[in-house]
Image (cartoon, rainbow, N blue to C red; front, side):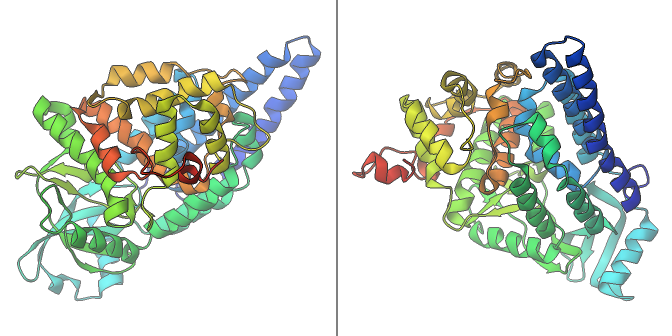
Length: 447
């Protein structure tokens, strides 16, 4: 990790530049106002420069700052491509090209975690990592009983770096408020910090993976590798073979793309109902198409515990939006915390913003594409003060749900998948199907 800023003092110094920069820009704006520039133009310039600096600094950091950037991805639609584009590119680079730990460090971590005799657990151990992620890397090995296994090893110091990032970011609420006045950032940060703390504990990840593996054992659609051994910083599970979605995206047939896309959506929507948890890291590298046609799923460090399944309001408001009753939709969004009490939104702008997210649920079969995604993003890519995206809030209980849906749509558009996605929503999302004798008000419990 030598090329990433990971020392606590360095990370704090970088994050500390944010509020200082904002104060300087605000003073500059006041000077321009006194010089005759219009308030709206000055406000736009301050917001754009603030966004530029936020994304630049967050993009340079790995860990908590990057997690926040991922969670706020929906608000990138409110920013010009010249600002958001480089930021997304930085996130991709950090996710896909984390520098591997040297073998000596890997051996030291294994000795610290498993003891001096750690090699006795393995018949073979490959010192070269087969994959790297934000807080750890994976090595291929052979367990002492002959089973091929994946050994996930946490980077030394990853926990301290993540928590340090969040402690620093918690002080920046006013800055985010200037950029996104409808957003209450503090509960979002608190929720992310709690979830990231869980990601650092590989025992918790092992428990989640075991629950998924048991539920989907012998399932015709999905496979989750069994957990073999774990402690807080080492996780050993069965090795899985197949073709990652990233390769299907690159050169898969249309039949493979459609099949993988449908299973991908089915897994994300059915898991809360079947397991009581939502896989919250839908990166293409975590999903593999196996030779028998099943979708293999990896990495359960980030999960959203949803013992009651998807929120009923989520499905109900989607259905009512499709029916055209925007008055009820706005009341429901307020009740769920997406629109804060002091915020007034343009209903037509809100309808235009939500339509792309709801569109795949309105038709029997839908074709995702990069072009479709670009067109939807273009409809809200501006920094005008009345841009509806800037007026919306992200309730803490929806942080990971949003993360999954935003990233999931991106994966489906990369795949270019066409399938009957609406059927999965009807089957697995409560409140979306037509009412079963209940009144509208009792079904919503929002108005």
